[in-house]
Image: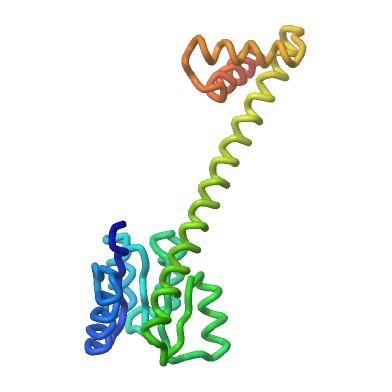
Length: 194
């Protein structure tokens, strides 16, 4: 199994170095480091890490604003490490789509489970989004096929099963997806009606 690739965003150099050392010791590969929110977003876009780990408030772009950008663009899961456990910040983190929120002081042993769960949740989210996209495509295809069937039934007096088989045969004969064949039938029918 390959090492998980992380980007660290921390404005204090010493803390960033300690965090990198800790993460490397835990078996992670730190592929990028940022001292501000804008750089964190840019590095995440460029490097496509498995996780963006952000600590405390960052200059140029607040960590939660940076997190929202990374999450919205589906670049990587975001984990926030902070001493700030106030309810407003936690709510902002939830709204920004942060996958994990770990408050200081934390134990080194707390990092691995939080990182792994954040990455797993992100993978699940991506999988669900792909399923939704596939279902939307299938529904769109089904709607076009149904419209083409209806047009064939009305124009040629076919029953539904015959209209479907005709679209199916045309699809096989032309080696084109049924959706494309159905779209062609709909367009041809519309042009014929003008």
